[in-house]
Every structure is written in structure tokens, then in C-alpha cells.
Image (cartoon, rainbow, N blue to C red; front, top):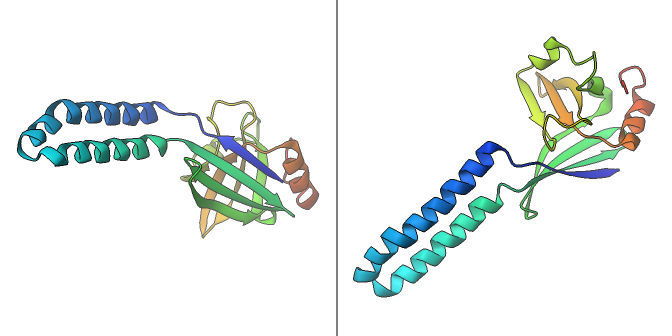
Length: 165
């Protein structure tokens, strides 16, 4: 079972995008004319290079997460700009301590205080956010994700006492 979730842009994302655009405009208005006086052919190439670099930086703010659940194993990949894929997390559900909705009584202060976490969601204020905890690489970890009902049923088949719906 697979599901792709697109992360919504945050204020930091918009700040980075705005800074890149302002930087490109500043380069075009101030730096490129100075270069044009001394190095005529280089100014256009420099502007094209800066514009392409700006495009790459802005497009890296487009992030998706892909969940793949197979026989109780979950793999979460981060997809950047639909070009680059990076494995974020991989584990067996048999290692999980609990799976439950964030908006439930199982989401205690103790779980909120876990230092290591993976946020693999559209945004934390969404209604369908679930979490699971486990010891991952020797450290207590919490993972936030948005599973389908089929994925939850798959986990429930392997660890029925640890899944809360």
C-alpha cells in the first residue's frame, strides 16, 4: 500500500522564496549592470546562472512524503521537487510501542516531550494525523504520518493491542 502526501509550505518556506526572488531582482538591477560595463558577455551568462540557481532553490521547497506499507513494514521517503528521493524512515510495525491519532487521549505529554521526531505530514493541524513511537537506532522516536484506513488495518493485523483508531 502506498500513499503520497504533499507538505504544505510554511512561513519559513515563503520567507526563503521571497528572499531568493529579491536576491535575483537585486542582482539584475545592481550587479549585472556593473558586470556589463567591464565584462560584456559574462553579464547575461551570470544572470542566467543566478536565475537557474534561484529556480532550483525555490523548487526544493516542494516536498512530498511517500508511505509504503508492506506486510507490517513501513518505509517513508521524502520526495523533493519530484526529482530527488531520500529515505527518511524504515521499520517494522512489530517494533512500535503505540499507533494512535494525535487528537486522542493516547497522545500524552510524555509522547510530546520525545526529542527525536519525524514530521511526515501535510501540516500538524490536519485532522487525520497519527503517530507511532518506537526505539529507533537506540533512541526513543515519534513519527507523525497520515495513513490510510487500509494501512491502519494492516498494522492492526500484526499488532492489534497497540493500534488505536
